[in-house]
Image (cartoon, rainbow, N blue to C red):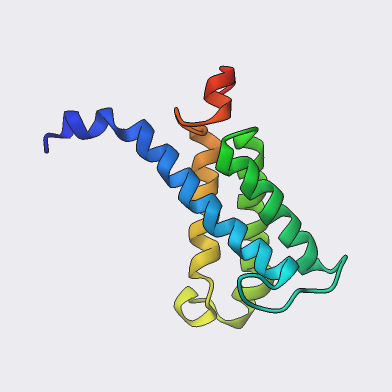
Length: 129
């Protein structure tokens, strides 16, 4: 497939990346808050509970593409915070400290915060992307 024809589909793949990342992120939040689909619910008002709120609410906003840039920026910050608070102290290397996912989430959401939601979003329909 020629590069030009691939490039013309890039905005749609941005929307797909946003939707998939948000769905997986929401799942992390529901696992923390409700113990669903797996895990045990965390105590209310704990640091993990606040993280779950960001993951569920921010994830839903990013999923539908509403206020995508600020939501994604906050979610990227949460993942940076999670990495440096929970993973980095265990080891410098992400392969050893289990921090691969937070690093990837951080940069995916940071990218989305800078480029916007893409064409398949509420922001694009409102003309605010």
